[in-house]
Image (cartoon, rainbow, N blue to C red; front, top):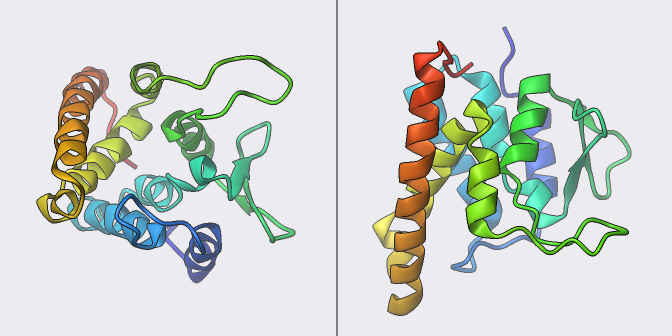
Amino acid sequence: GFHITGEHLRLAALAYAVEKDGNGHPLLLHALRVMDSIAWDHPAAVSAQVTALFHDAIEAGTARLSNRRDVLYFEREADGIAVEAAVGLALDAISRRTVPRYGTDQAPESYEDYIGRLCLDPLACFVKLYDLSDNMNATRLAALPPERAAKLLTRYAAARKTIRKALSAAEKQGWEPT
């Protein structure tokens, strides 16, 4: 069956080469932790693992999806990597639109609107819960100024509640991670 390959890992390293998380650590390590958590809990859920591996690359601006959302392209790389339709849709859903779309005066997406849009895609919900779990890690939060950590914890807890509700509804309809 399909599995994470060295090419996935090479492209993730390329996508996150200079990107840092809120604590100044390489963003690649966060993506790998999220992917690894899913791999431990759901070893057969490779689509979820691929989504986790690249979940911050589009937001970081180092990767983009093709119009059909079936190929992920990277900066400084001529060829993209094909992704399953579900992965492409989930990557689109999990990527917050923090800048106006080219040629529009559309305002950046609020966090609440982002979570609402993300909740329409069960795979994105599934991966985002693991992302939030890593973001809410006490050690990571302790490295931030206390006010900032408290604000983020409140935001993440509210998002987690909303996402869990959406994912639960999808699971009742038969959705499961692949």
